[in-house]
Amino acid sequence: MISKKLENAINKQINEEIFSAYLYLSMGAYFHSLNLDGFAVWMKAQAREEMSHAMKFFTFLNEMDGRVSLLAVKEPEKNWKSPLAAFTAVSRHEQYITGCIDELFRMAGSEKNFPTQIMLQWFIKEQVEEESTAAKIVFKLNQIKDSVSGLWILDKELGGRQVNS
Ligand SMILES: [Fe+2]
Ligand SMILES: [Fe+2]
Image (tube, rainbow, N blue to C red; front, side):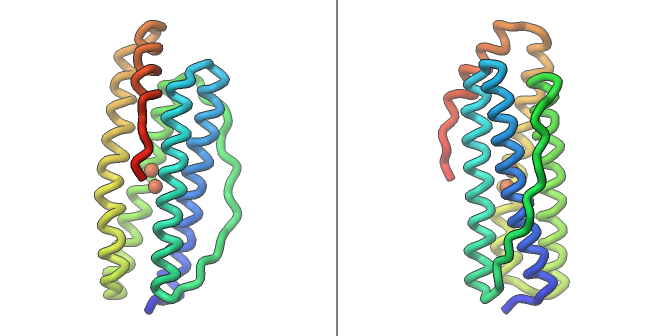
């Protein structure tokens, strides 16, 4: 039901999603170290969401009679210059992930693997949301600049995040 090439590419994507979880968990630790616990709550929720993405690919590959193969997870960065630098990195990382999903979609298309394309549609929509959310927070942090009170207000807002997947 699935080619070796596509199976390998989905296994690579499982690794990318787990790395995303690892990166955001590392950012959560960074924000806790700054006593920005609301930012940390947001990052930990984001990490759980990335693990759920990894599991969607894991489940799909099994359903398609493929073999899940887990690869080594890279060590994430641990420090950023500022909350703005961290969220700029989130934004860039999500753009990179969008590129990976797009490439998978193209590969599934060239193999006429329609179930994989349909599965990937969820991720294509999800990436629009991920990029937009990150861009909005980067925008707010740019406006906040060095305002401590602004940072605390955003910390309170981000701390209210609920996990919905
Ligand atoms: Fe993801
Ligand atoms: Fe993401």
